[in-house]
Image (cartoon, rainbow, N blue to C red; front, side, top):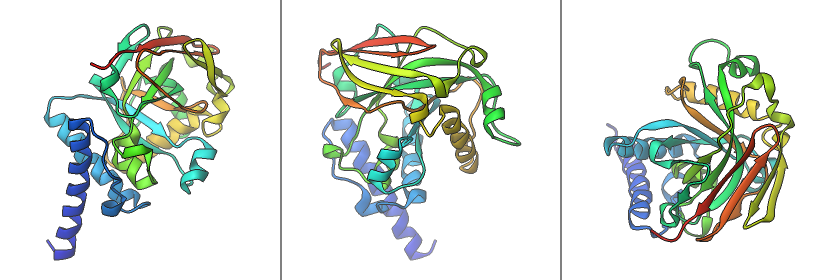
Length: 269
């Protein structure tokens, strides 16, 4: 391998190691953009793939994906014009009524989303809205607990992509609704923490339509050689602003047509 390529691989390995050490120690790290660049998406996904391989080698199982940066305001803040995505692992999943250990997510922030569970692969052919809608088995109300291994959430696009799109954990609600009975872009969302409304929004706030976010992901995942598969969960992106979490708080998100999902962010484990 050419010396400049070897040097580049060493930088990507160093970025992955920095983020892994933060996750292992529970101490947030410096940004990794000094190693991968602030907007080099290809390099950032290469780091993310290293982290995924490490988790899988340790016994974790990939169960889906999360889509981030679906808000126009957040895209403008980071100076980007497209979403990003990360990987969901089996140990990140929780269900309504659960207590999520506070120590399981670094610098946690909650955001309400629509989760899609796929009933068919999205591998070949057209991946437009009609196709992805048909591939969805059902939708579920969800709360994503975003987390950043980067200190103070000091992130560029490169940092968040490398850091598995700032993923932490997620909670799925009890109601499973098929799309012939639910229109994602028309949904309205309210999220409360300890009974106080802290975030509101709608399906239209997620790239204009959460199914448009799913279509984007289906295409991008296929381009990167790891297409979406039946049975996977896809968190389609925030319907409203995300809010910080503190131990002991109780979170509830209500999405019209999907019901509610709630959990307690427990004491430090």
